[in-house]
Image (cartoon, rainbow, N blue to C red; front, side, top):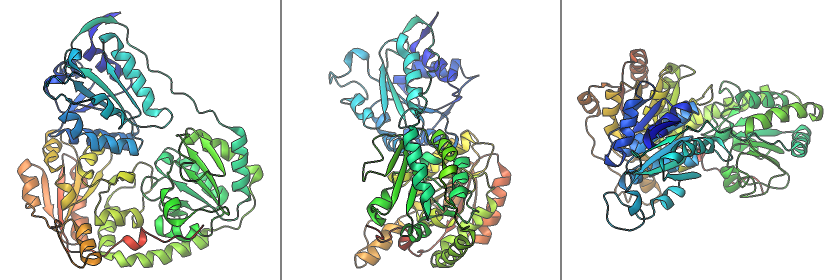
Length: 541
């Protein structure tokens, strides 16, 4: 046994679980934690942000890009609340983010005395944002709680966890033995359900595979199943890159909608299926097979024909093993899929301005480079017209779709994956949510390229007001800085590109630089609406 403070035990346990980076903003409630981080700085580095939301979004980006546990640390009360949007997004995206939140003195918690940063029922607020939370009440339990939180990140429904610790508890000492990492429960595969799924998929004439974020680690299995079933693979945001986007079987939302009316069996891997249930329709002629980590998810909107609960990778591998003897012979669909893809490619010319810029980005970004989208006209288009070739190379905010997430999240991805280029896109509206983190990017020499498409408006809001509300435009116009001068003032590389060709050249220079952040401003005007490709009518049921 070794005498350690609660903070030292927490840091040592994080390191034992493979953590090598802490995203953080310091403050008095966590002084002892940062003292412990300093003592272990040869094994874990601290990346400090300029706002708490930046630290949390960076942890989220790092988690999405690596699927490794990524912690952040902030003070209680306002510090916690400043990270709540990022923590909520981590929950909705099942990202392995660990929040370390300070607390007021242990004996004062819940008494409403008015301590610095006191907040009523902080633990209750946290519990609404994560699946696992606990408070380190004594030094002896610190290591065990870290191990429990780390296990929770990947158990059952994956997602974030949080630990609180009082200001007077971080520095308290006790003799202790560090808790070894706890095993993650293995998926118990339901063989009867596997057989039922194999029979339904094997008998189908026109099967389809739907991929969400839960399929990101199943690329090999999904690719093999697609070939066995001659099944197109639909991914909208979180499932992009699971099947190589160069394959004619890799489809996005509009072609998926066209195929949906013809589909007689759908294998849905790690997806809520909300668009299909709430927009396109589901009926009894469609056999839905759900693969979900969360046992409560499959029947949330409509009970599927077959439900397979657990880690998707071993489930799909077992399904492949069983499917062969039940799989009917089908005519190859490659020619048909290529014809459909070509037709939709021509239709996508309706959003040609967005498409040309995205083509420039795709051409310059290596196939293993990471692209981070935003809630912007370019982001909406990227989800449909931009191909992705590998898992975890397209980061999109899932059903939260929260404006302003992109830049800080991309900083985390670029920090954690310094081996590949990372490019983020933002509108001028979303970029200024976390633009202050340009200071963080420069301080820590994070090699991110951020492209700001500037139209001096919340462009999507403005167009809706113009088209749907009789041009009653309100609260959607923006006053912007000169973004090139803004980035330059921090010491970042910056330039302006006005055309796709200029953007292509600027990106080539930025990706070659790799010694810190680059911002490229692209002035644009109003862009054509992408909504006809996103909100499509009911075709079943």
